[in-house]
Image (cartoon, rainbow over the protein chains, first blue to last red):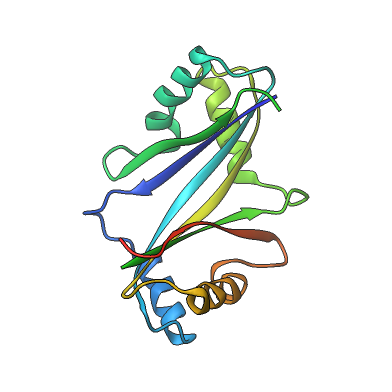
Length: 84
Length: 84
């Protein structure tokens, strides 16, 4: 079993109302020093077999089609385990 | 400016319908070897000053009140930069 973690974040020029709501909530709970909060998504993908370069290439291709909206989001393959 | 990244994931015994939808989408796009997908949230929190132990302790305390629902979710402080 291999595992890939993909992080999807809003591009920096895109407004993040959810992040702003969390920012205000943290500040109202006493964390006054918070300057900004950005919320993102994470996909932990488990594979039946081991992970090879072909699988990683497929994940990278599908990340911009299935996992993220390339108009407003960036993605990065944060980590992977070939087998576990 | 310090920065803290908090990952929030569903507990393993909690159903993840969003992850299941992504699983089916990946499989239908040709990634047949996918066995499971779990979707999580990420909060990137930027602070005005440097980050010290007190700030990290506050983040940890608020992560279970503001950032996550401890009944169904786990959180982990993935990384932090004291200053940047």
